[in-house]
Image 1 (tube, rainbow, N blue to C red):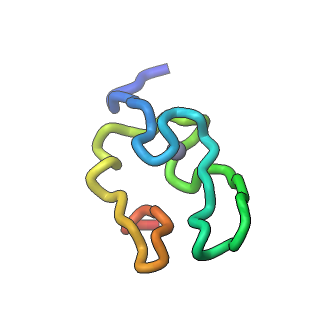
Image 2 (cartoon, rainbow, N blue to C red; image 1 turned 60 degrees about the vertical axis):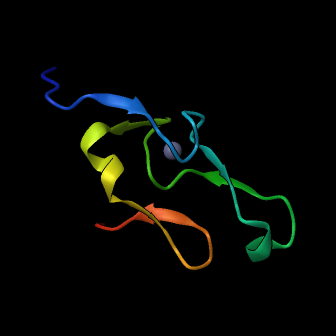
Length: 63
Ligand SMILES: [Zn+2]
């Protein structure tokens, strides 16, 4: 397999692939799969595309 892109630990979930839903949104502790990465790894060039929504949820600018 040819991998050009460097994979780094996802900055959103810290490589766990699980993120906590903002308490303001869920009103309880809810864990969901990270929307940004796959298995906690993200392409290095994707990190710049990560933004935080008004509700505090992090997601990619591009989909
Ligand atoms: Zn992640």
